[in-house]
Amino acid sequence: MYSDSREYLLDELNQLDMIIHLQVLKQQQVRSVDPLQQFRGLVLSEEEIAGLLGDVSVLPKDDESCQLREIKIEQIREGLRVEALRIRERREASLNNGIYLSLNHLAQIFNLTHFEQQCIIICLAVELERKYGKLYAYLQNDVTRQKPDVELILKLLCAEPQERLVARSVFSPQAPLIKHGLLQLADNSPGNLIPLISRNLKLNDRIVDFLLEFGQIDVRLAPVASLVLPGADKSGKFQGIETRQRVKEFLYSYFGESGSVGEGVIFYCHGKYGAGKKLLVESLCDELELPLIYGDTERMLDSWIPFEELMQLLGREAALQGAILCMVNFDHLLDGGDKSLLQVESLIEAVQTYSRLTFLLGRRPWNPQGVIRETVFIDIEAPAPDVTARQNLWEELSEEYLGADTPAFNPDWRALAGKFRFTPGQIRDALAVAHHRALWCPPGDRRVTMADLYAACRAQSNQKLSSLAQKLKPGYTWDDIILPLDRLKQLQEICSQVKYRDVVYDQWVLLAKCLMAED
Image (cartoon, rainbow, N blue to C red):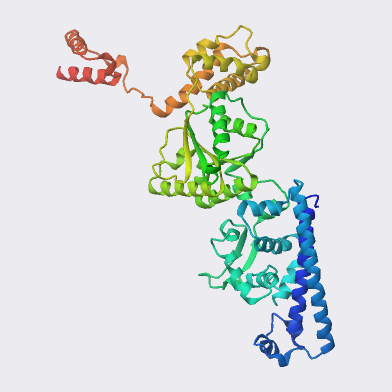
């Protein structure tokens, strides 16, 4: 039984050493005694070409050496059979005892065969020890090729040519190793002119970290995503207990049914800023004891990496972390026409491929209209709290955000709750602003007052108003209006016939100028 993943991987690497040793003996068996042997990979001799064509006359003539090599080959083959059986038994014993093995977990996530797992081991080896790069270069007759190509992997893992023909399919674009970006096929030639068997393979850096149990997310996702572990300190307390309980009960009942194994669930949670959408997801993850990955749609759209590629990386990361996927600022995908529709489709495709449970967070309602298939879609609105709930929020959060700065004169929280229809997030922001205003005062006056709270609330309200309204600067003042007495009476009669609220100041001035022009 293995104690951890690293011990298991070391056993796999020891077995790889035996496989490489066997391949070295096989290649030496067919190589001729050539004065240009030291230049192999740089010079092609006639003897080497003849050997490639199967001309037995160029094979080594030392019968004793050939016989010893055959004995050694059989010994290694027998050792490989014993070693493979020992590794399999230890791996099964470890899994039966609940020991986590990263390679086995990776195979479960992406449904990898034993052959595909061995391909990963071969590519992992060169990422851990430089000796494997030299061994691969020797086996490929090229000192510059220190990563394994497809042909070398097929030779190491397949005994017969017919097996190699069948095994080529694991390197196709739709096979798991390539489709999910676990292995990368290197090809620097224009138009993909290099044959598949000659293309080098590299294990993805994120997969290397995963196998070695390094938990950080893919570096390419760092600017647009974040990982939240269950139990981590949160910025606030979720208020919608009933909504969270309903979601949790649905998930337990849905995923507990045998008929729902193949379909995932997407929750679209929408509501005003600060309504508690993120807190809903975080509190749910805490109860389920699952990590959470946030993806910021707005930042992804502005990234230099294509949105579709980022979505695949984000979905794969959620699968690797065993995390719930949550996309914030989803609204930014809904206003770009046909291009946005393609991006929404790529998002849904990544979600359906990698995530069983996904949350999309936005501020306005959204109807998928046929975009989502084979996935359960549930719409959740996060409404603003009523007056009583807002009053309770003011009282609870004031201690959290103000603490000792809470005014001693017993503030009227109900008045604030009645005048400002704030969401929980807006209440938190207002309390924080009031606290910061008090800090700016002289040391002896650093106490939050009702004036600070009202100023902070107006600042929250004016943010939306400023985006909808524009302040007009009048071009005239009342001193510009000079009218004769008869004209002034005429102006009064005209104005009495219109709705005062529909007449702006400049219209009054314009009307007065027209009357003056008649004189």
